[in-house]
Image 1 (tube, helix red, strand yellow):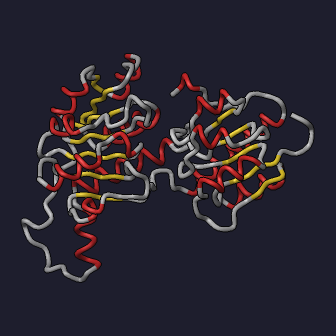
Image 2 (tube, one colour):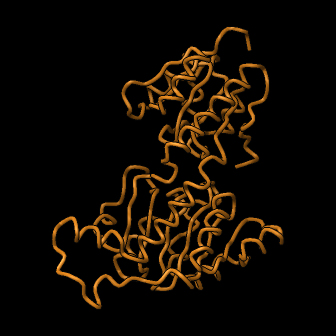
Length: 328
């Protein structure tokens, strides 16, 4: 790249410290209004940028990339997941894609445990009664949930976040089980005291809690489909802090309404902000607005990774967090 400062276009508001540093390093176009860009606005942003900094809410498909022109050379995604970007088409057009892996591991694992606790112990129901002023006092059979210790936890996807969930679950006395594309090394398995299941179906049928921690790829779309959800025990619960597309949300909703699954904790949804309205009606469901990585520390670290990726690229080197299609 030439020596002049890169033109960087950011699609959403970022933490102030990140925006300040970005402005010092590059010719940056920041957002004043914190709303998702429309499709046409995204295409226009790509046409005038050397580097685009999008986030998960920005769907960038092949058709949009075809309209981007020749200027765009790097999509420095603010976030670890890149399923919203057509990475293969980007690479074909000479556009690199980077992400921010690793910085949200602990934060997302914390949220997975928070959802497990909230669903099993019926925390939102108790909060609602107190906030509405309807508490009639302690009673022996009121708000009885399930004990966390001793429960079998089945982790779907044993990468960094899945392993962090396993460590937390073990501290609560849960039995850790997992299914993964590849079995972990024996030393890691032993350290986590985790039991591997080659058959996802067999694991699902025996667990008390399922935690979804795998990325969204073509092979994981609706991995938890209606057939697999029906394998779950009626008293089991499922939590998802990964990607909504991994679960067939309509099938899950039907089974929760019918009492065929005891509960669910969801931080992500199949259609983004369009949450199935029937889910909101259920007391045995905890819904959160994609808060898994929402810590001040994590969001600043994500921004720092974006800055390093752009600066490395500007210096003529490969971004350290370059995403290639074979990784997906």
